[in-house]
Length: 336
Image (cartoon, rainbow, N blue to C red; front, side, top):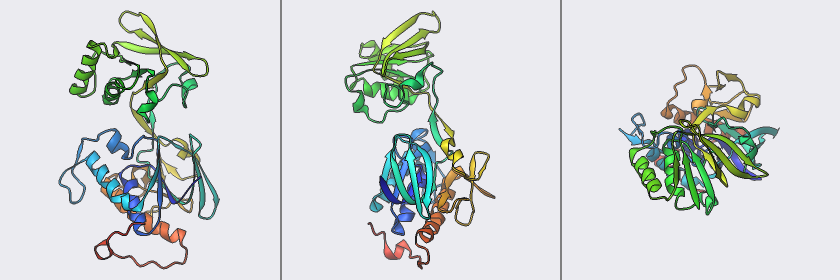
């Protein structure tokens, strides 16, 4: 059981800044995100995209902003559970919540903050029969959490974007065999990555199947083979595989959050704009996932929400305790 003051669902920029604001109030944070790294959309979707509306930065790359937020939070020793999704939220008593992930990890917290951006990013899955049968450690996964787990394995990667190309290049030096399956002849990824994959295929270091679709997966308790078919010729092929990694992107959904008794309006959580609390005492929602009058879905607005939420959370955790706000320009940043 992981124990913390504040459990934050999500690890995007607003969640990361919450660590800093809560840390100033001597509150510890534990973050949970389904993505394999902190940063949310900024790291997963557009890490090299410039952002122009962060105060003090005429221009900052998305990943650079994430890196700075992580560094800013470091003095407060946050902990993380990445690559897992919160499935259930149970309020045991006042200031006592138990959160459970899809992998069985349990977190005890006095306050819960939902900072999941547009929601939980779920993988876009190919329409292949019995795919779910081999999920959860049985051979099929939709993101690479630990590259070493593929050491000396036979793997099939499906997709044509940056993630598929980048992991194909990287895992060629880790796995015994790598096959990249793509339904087209052209790729959506960076030209440099495309050229590297084509070169690896020409050198016989990996297998490239273009104009090809996944059709079937087979095995007993774990994955054994992947069936594919060439779209143009109709010729089928069976590939021996220990792992299949479909990388077709992610789509945002509220997911299990919909079932937690929160007031929801058009896939967003209704909050009190005074402190971004929800209808459940002790549960807050900040960032793109919440809604209130005059809501603006901007990172800088999320930072403001994080600050007000943290002060409200302090009062909730410490009822009756008087707190006098002190500026960091006076006191500095004192780590735990």
